[in-house]
Image (cartoon, rainbow over all chains, first blue to last red; front, top):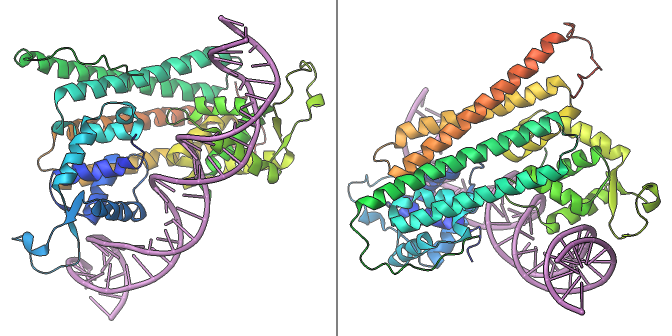
Length: 201
Length: 201
DNA sequence: GTTAGCATGTAAGGAGTTACATGATTTT
DNA sequence: AAAATCATGTAACTCCTTACATGCTAAC
């Protein structure tokens, strides 16, 4: 079961999947990516890179291997994906399940959706959507019980929260429709014997 | 400087400020409040309560102190705010500064806005707004530099993210205007302590 | 030549989750 | 009588942040 820590790992894998990069640059990209919340600190990134190095998911690029670069400014460590790392990336991206549609994880998955095939994309989008729907239901249900004398600001916060989640649900629905629309363009599925019902909850 | 840990503490102080409550109930309310993300576990709440007990911010309500309650079902521990806890709550709520408009903290502050006066509210709302505005600027700036070949899904994620934040900025602006509108109703003297808080509806 | 930004790291510690452990009360 | 849910707690662990520490390079 994927821990939360795999969030950074998956993001690094994904970025390096697009090309070699050094730590500092990774951090900047990562902050842009998941940076809507907090910033990622060096204290998280570098140890994570070391760990991935130990696991042979990534490897240092030898300085000579990067031609065209000016021979000076030598002190940054450029990383690239190993075959094992690439395989791990594919594996993680193909995982459908709760870990794929939790708040943080979902954004990362989505960012690298191009690296997965449509069936996975659809399942992740749908999983995310029902996750949010559940939340709305739960809040609505609990709100019905607790609602006595509601504070003005508390009510406004609730309203805004619900509205935001509803907005996100609509966004997901649009994306799902777009994917489904694209699916009908493709030739009829050759051998699809209706896979497991995927009891997503 | 307020650590992140004060998030739970402030929330508990705020809830108990509205009336005595036992731990289990606190957890439910807390999850509804900040539960848009993850759920708060017992492993966080109970130790936090213990810590607050030690700090005399809260105290156990003696069972006899709650008349009207059925004498049975005795095992839950009801907490109430002490004078010290109430003072601490006021102090935290009056704090203007970064801690007040960080993601998690802001929601809590807002939830208990009724317990503060308008000048504080305005400053927190404005602080929050410029925080978000900064983020938008930063993203826009960095996007201008990095933008070469943008991945389709990466671009969509960015777009949606920007739109959400812009939406939040508008929400804040509306709230700020509402507060300012209410302010013009009160007599002009700015140098008076103005101990009469507007009715909390 | 000195400030600012690039670039990499480590150590200590905080905050919170998971899993465990227990028992009472209410509902079916 | 069993199952669900209420209710409280502890221990181990993970993840991450803060603060510290270092040195190179570019700009002013």
